[in-house]
Amino acid sequence: MFSTPAFAQSAAGGAAGGTSAFLIQIVPLILLFVIFWFLIIRPQQQRVKAHRAMVDAVKKGDDVVTGGGLVGRVVKVTGDEVEIELGPNMRVKAIKSTLATVTQRGAGAPANDAKA
Image (cartoon, rainbow, N blue to C red; front, side, top):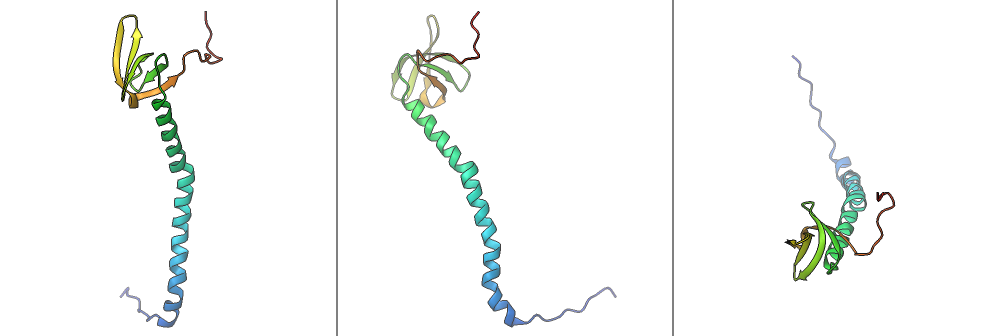
């Protein structure tokens, strides 16, 4: 009652158009991957590389902030660990890779820091 007749497709047009149809479908996917590469993947790789270089260059006397939010000064660096002084007579050991920020001692304070 609601059925429609099925018509046979010609085989001559399908063989020649198959390759170009595949390329038309795959080109947007490749273009999308290239856009993701330049907007997301590549900048993230550069940030990771810069963080690794910063952590590898940490030395005694640097001010650091850990991933957990502890702020202190590096007292000792051994292998992949650092000893951080959080206050007078209060020291903790941390793994270098958990350091979020490393500031060289003597580096100027940001301009918006008001000292009262």
